[in-house]
Image (cartoon, rainbow over the protein chains, first blue to last red):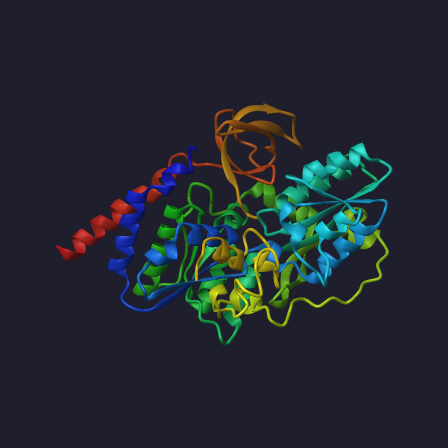
Length: 362
Length: 81
């Protein structure tokens, strides 16, 4: 397909690999911050093509994986209510909270529907005026504009039976949290290109300056990632710490202004718990007060139950901070597999553990 | 989850604020919300994420990843010369 196949060209990839080998003079640790990049790196074995001095660690780039158990518990609670249709992206269905997940609740009779787009959930709400339709809104800044437009449309249609359970997260605040950790070892970031497509580059400037760390907005195909790695390493070798854009075909410096306008209308910045990382200030988006009637948190009555975030045997938090890799985990591939996961990164198709398992990285 | 797939706009229907269109991905077509690419026209390539076009692909910038390789070669040649 156009704009995909050409970025998988082996000849150009090997030129990048050679250029990186010629460039690197010392040890460096880079982190990618998007689950799609994690999978591309592991799927194409890009980490194995790099010089031994270059280590790639995998950040908190999987929104499904960082969705806290508290949010999932509320989704499970809603899905168990007889009058509710809970709509979700497919990725969320197998992520556990306590001893349950949405797939299990569906098997027990809950009305859980997988949708491709949040607009599909609006359609379901229109078709079922006698039911409460709730969309489980997870995702980074890439995904939040789709939910923003859906909520705006629900308001225009004055839909009385539609709401969203919001768990959106913001990438820059997570980078800041990682870098302020005294044990941080990440020296350069490949930023998640599609987040930059929406938000642009400006938010990353203060982070690059404050922590003296290069940040390169990077795409998702093998050549994109290799170029992003080259640009990041080149900055490090030259002693620079700047924000650069590898993914120019899709990222404009100011981002997508129509999408940003919608985000500002529908959401407000909130503190958010990241599974495995704890609470990060201002790292989430919640519905603005003017859309309160579409906010499932405010619309329903709750009797929350305390659930454990993760098994004590799961090292997801350490992996997402870049301290460990999935293959460092004692349970990897034995006590923890996609069929019997201990933590979310083994469940989600974009989790680092699932990627290592699927592509046989030992 | 942040996966976005490139496709070509085949038709635009629906009007602002919920501008919709038909986008072709290889042999598959799909209804996509075009509200966030207000300037996109038929035949443009867009990146689609969860049913929403989030960017028009810049055809000129699309070759940048290859041009950059040539720039590296030129810099390396100049440094070694």
